[in-house]
Image 1 (cartoon, rainbow, N blue to C red):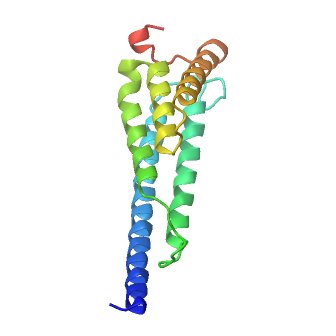
Image 2: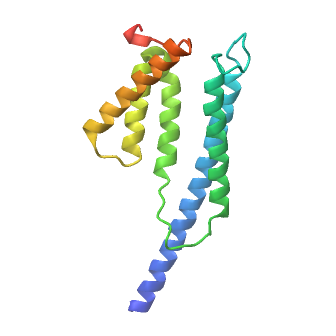
Image 3: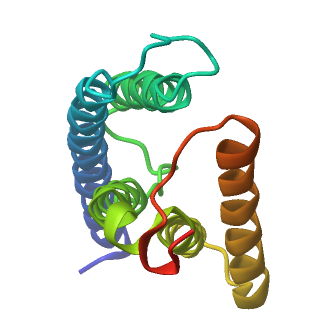
Amino acid sequence: MTATEESVDAARTSDVEVEASRRVRIIAAVVLIVLSTTFLVGVFGIRSPKGLDPAGPRFFPLLVTVAWLVLSIAYLVEGLRSPRTSRASDRSWFEPLAVSGLLVLYALLVVPLGYVIATALLFFAAARVLGSRQLVRDIVVAVVLAVVVYIAFTQFLDISLPGGVLGL
């Protein structure tokens, strides 16, 4: 095989990989949209005499879920608009699917484990999936953020979060 033939084969392989990566991004975006829409429906199942008042228990979950939905739609649009072939694209399909899986796992574990433990695990795992390799820093940031958010919601906003195994 000549150098020219090898170059053409490498270009074809790269084009196939980019198209597969593009397709996976589109599928991941659709999965994110379906998950966020499902959670959005669940947010409206939260009973609140205050409706959508910022002091009510529905406001922040609604805010986060709507932001998740908007970003998922933007991710879909980006995937649809990306060129079908480009050697410069080295995006990975792993991250969006892994983070989606983490969010589903978080939804399943937040009640039995409790908000603090489940959220700290989510933050830590998401940091690792997204490429952080600072083990101690990731653990400290995850725990501190989870505790600070828990205190802010329960003490200052009077929003009940699952205590789980810690019994908070």
